[in-house]
Image (cartoon, rainbow, N blue to C red; front, side):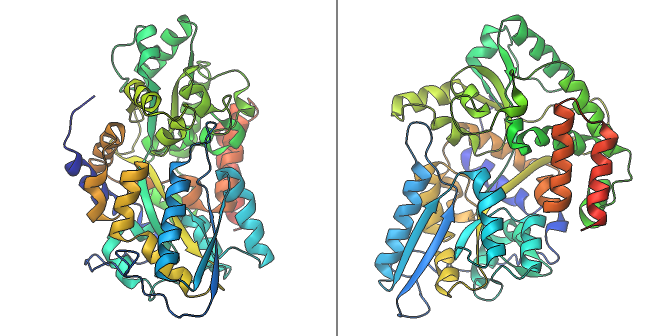
Length: 454
């Protein structure tokens, strides 16, 4: 692993966030900095003193060991805010990610009985929610936060307005177990697909599962195709797809051809089409965390998912960190894409349109410099507040941040960027290819057909 300066890498990551595709935002976030509205729990400015209950849905669920650092931290943040604002009661629900994103939130919004504050991934999915009138416009109420966080807010903006705020942002790559690489005789991280294919064969020859994938949840499998599209397509072609749903460039079909070639090497675990991503020891994350698979393509958050499969002791977590490596998606032989571009995204929160004004105030507190610094220290996450950058200490995340900081640009996850209709059709088509039931052209045709009805 390359040794780098922590502060420099994270600062570079924060700078790279501003390069997320402009399609995520009609108007860029203001770049000037201003003080946090709620830099500590004693400085919060709740709008009134009438009794208010805020419901808060987030995806900070515990791992198999019951440890839940992020859930515990959000509870602490809520308690601190309530102590400073005695009229406010915050009712937290922690819901598993896939259930929250794909089922619970859409159903709650459509029923008109949504939580006041809920997890938000931005991009096209958020834009669709805003267009439907489900989200509170935070442009004026949280103007100081928007200015302080700068370009990091772009994926949470639509048509010049801001409908959510992020608390972390990062890019994805391949997580791997060093000990399994060593067992298979692999001495260097692969930098090209040819090298990855060779390493897959070495791992198979050693009787090991090369790559775990949670295709049962669709999006983890789809991310392989996203990365091939990033390598095949120029930024202009990606912009055309994101802005206009124009998938006429041959690069979109080429992405499927490259994925088909990878699938043909038989790199994945048995029953990968029914494997989930994060729940249970047989999930793709569980297979890597317990040493039953060597690699997994996944985002910055997965180091914390892996920790959830240890016994939670400092010794076990340290042992995991010592054996856990990360490298960016390997380069392809050709393609019009920027070889330094990266896929990325983040986590944030939105307020329901009918939520009380305290929701916007509490969200301001969540993204304040003090809470963001505590998030990095207590959970090890990648905060978006520049003032919290120096609090990141996890070596793998520092390395990941260096890659992000040197990226030509960061492309938002394609399903998030395209929105639920086109993104859902795309993911379905990709998973069909994983199951041996679809072609490269079928994926593009499904996306085009979905775009025609959007």
